[in-house]
Length: 148
Image 1 (cartoon, one colour):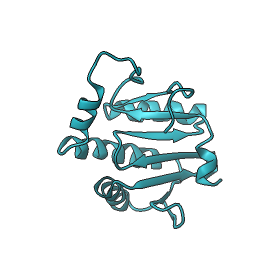
Image 2 (cartoon, rainbow, N blue to C red):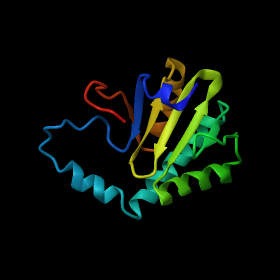
Image 3 (cartoon, rainbow, N blue to C red):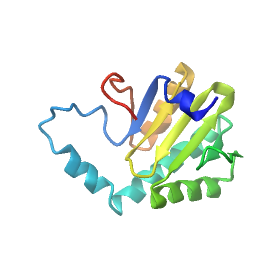
Image 4 (cartoon, one colour):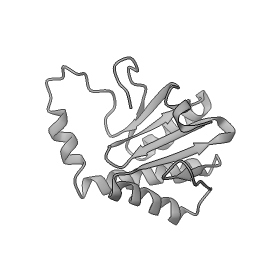
């Protein structure tokens, strides 16, 4: 499936926050987001993202691409870490395709969350456990008001 096709599918978010921040929130979301997008906080978040992907890769084949053109299947753990750090450093995209189960994870190097497109019930249960083990949250956004 093409990347664009996944963007039309239902999605969940792996995030530092436990749920979507409402548009009319009284808090200071943008100031706090800016704080987490700085070092060393961002390195910590992307290490957790890397660990989530490594743990998930124990259960599912994964194809990685930074351009959507060239893909590498099940790269070594060090290569996955390097791809995540490159994604963060260059503020670029990283696509993780799990073709056998028709799920895609997209990471944008300038965000504090990962997006999981078209997840199955089984993968959500597994991801929920993995994400919690890293101190992060998995939640379904109000997809009428939020676009990735």
